[in-house]
Amino acid sequence: MSTIAFLGTGLLGSAFAEAAAKRGDTVTAWNRSPDKLQALARFGVIAAASPAEAVRGAQRVHLVLKDDDVVEEVLAAARGGLLPNAIIIDHTTTLPTRTAARAQRLKTEGVKYLHCPVFMGPPAARNAQGSMMVAGPKLLFEAIKSDLSKMTGRLEYLGERTDLAAANKLFGNAMIIGVSAVMADVLTLAQASNVCGEDAVKLLGLIDLNAIVNGRGLKMAKGDFTPSFELTMARKDLRLMLETAGNRPLAALPSVAERMDQLIAAGHGTEDSSVLGINAVQSN
Image (cartoon, rainbow, N blue to C red; front, top):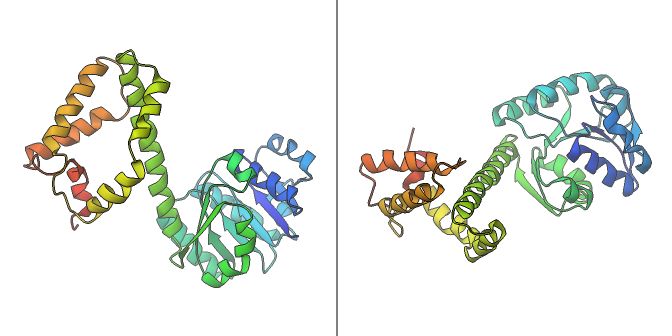
């Protein structure tokens, strides 16, 4: 078993720490708010008063923090207690450019670092489900691959480009947030149509979203806007949605309608509605 530390015990960090302790690892944890450590004591997690205290003797140091600024602050505070061969595993969702700069700086300083953001909530973290992405030195990844595999249902090594996991985490979160916004609008349309929201959600099962991503999404990425659902027709349907919603607040559809109007005015009305992504595939 391993001796590890968790810096940051919010909902996700505490779930990771709990799961590690249950697997038999020796786990020490630190959090800016000490009260968040109290619930972990019953699992055998040791509370530390500082990041430096938490990482003393730890072979792996897991960061589950808010953002880049906090990562830098906590790393600086932990350095005094860090073992020379300790591996820092950063699960924080961070800016790709800052992630790459941090990885390069730490490499220069002789600190081992992997960026490993995840797609999982606390229940998944407790049960080794969900997905974890890894970016950084391959030899370092291979050295702890088996340990990381115990934390997740799916482990994806993306390569040595240190900002790649950070970028992909933003891609995934954009999809999650976008789907949530559209789902909110679907529920608003259901309310306006006197349809049970749960029934509306169930009927969405008729749509194969994976096929849309793998089909329409890949065509968009290639800049192929051959029409199968013309933009002008999609805009007509969107007008019907907006009229149905009336004065009810909408999260996403009004912005989509505005963008469609811009593209139609620019002469793209007969192209596929996926032409919404045209600027993303044009050369800078």
